[in-house]
Image 1 (cartoon, rainbow, N blue to C red):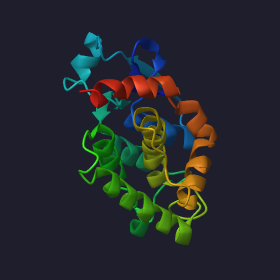
Image 2: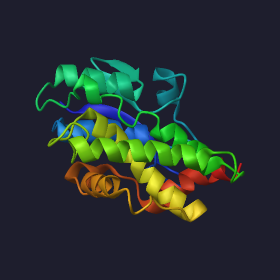
Image 3: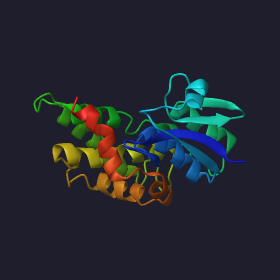
Image 4: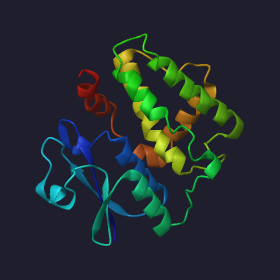
Length: 212
C-alpha cells in the first residue's frame, strides 16, 4: 500500500509540486528507497480542512504511518530508515553534520539588504568547508554512495543556486570545483529529477521572503 505524503503545492499553481526543500527531502528518500507513495499537494493560500484537522500546525511535509500523521522531515526520514532499511541511507556519524549550517547561511545572505553585514562571507565559509570535505571524502558526503545527508543538502543547494542567481546575480565561485561537481551529481539523480520543483516555482516561493 502506498504511503500518503502531504507536500507544498506551487505558488500560483495548486496542482503542481511546490518549492519546499524539506518536502523534497522526504520525497527523495521515498524514491531512493523505492517506497510507493501518493502525494497530497497542499495549497498554502487555502489549506484544506482535512489537512488542518490532522495537522493543526499546518506545516509540511507530513506523512501517514499506521493511521497517524507525522510531521518534521528529520523525524520522517528517521522512521523511513527504520521501516525500510534497504537500501540503507544511513550517513556515518562523522559525516552526519556536514553542511548543516549551509541553509541558514544561504537564507541570511539571500534576505540581506546590507552588503557589509558579513552574510556573504559566512555563506562562502560554509561552501568552502563543504568543498574541503568533498575533496577528501567525495564525490558524495560519505564517499561513493548517496546517504541521508546528501538528500537533505540536495534541495537546499538547488534553492541556493536558483535564488541567489535570480535575486542577487550571485553564483558559487568556480574555484569550489568539488561543490560544483557535487551539485551536478545530485541534480542529475533520477530521484532528484522526479521530485524537484520547477525553477520558476522556486523563485515564486522565495519572492515574498526576499522582498519583505
